[in-house]
View 1 (cartoon, rainbow, N blue to C red):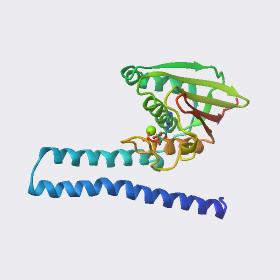
View 2: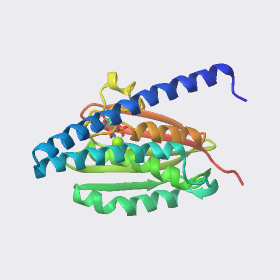
View 3: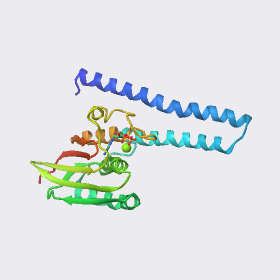
View 4: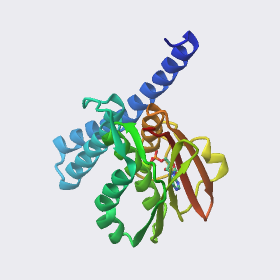
Length: 223
Ligand code: ADP
Ligand code: MG
């Protein structure tokens, strides 16, 4: 049972999110309508190109938001996070290579089993790593570390990228907050929601010009 206050807060957040989504989707739609009108009177290949890009943009936004809606059946299982992280590294290694990024991993936690929907957590971790890559346009090292802290599992994603200015740290997790030219500003919010859905605790530390540490702490399964 949720208190009325919590329910009200959730409704407020949903309202803000809805307003943001409407706005973010209306912009490309307006562009699409405008360019279709142009095409009707004066066909140009590059107008079609813009239409296609704007449709991609809408698709990207909807794909990220669908994770929140949990369209796939939730599957909560006991999962060894060390294995999950290894799979993610294998998955992202080709892209990392292309961007001159090396992974440095240290799976120090020997109790790494948690109860989770593995696909959701993978999504969250991939979002963090994508941000890490994008913070290092010249390449560099991304560290992934695990540790047992008390009766919890700590997972850290550490990059040596551009960092986040202190006054922007508060905006992290706000829907559509982005500093990137073609960012969606949804990845972090979605990831945060997933971590919290798993009773996880998320903290971010960052220094401009030095890099960023994303830390998630999860309750572990005790046998
Ligand atoms: P997007 O990546 O589409 O911009 P996100 O929600 O994933 O949206 O991230 C929001 C913003 O947070 C980014 O635009 C960036 O400014 C900042 N950010 C997130 N992660 C990092 C990071 N590892 N290093 C630097 N900035 C980051
Ligand atoms: Mg992102």
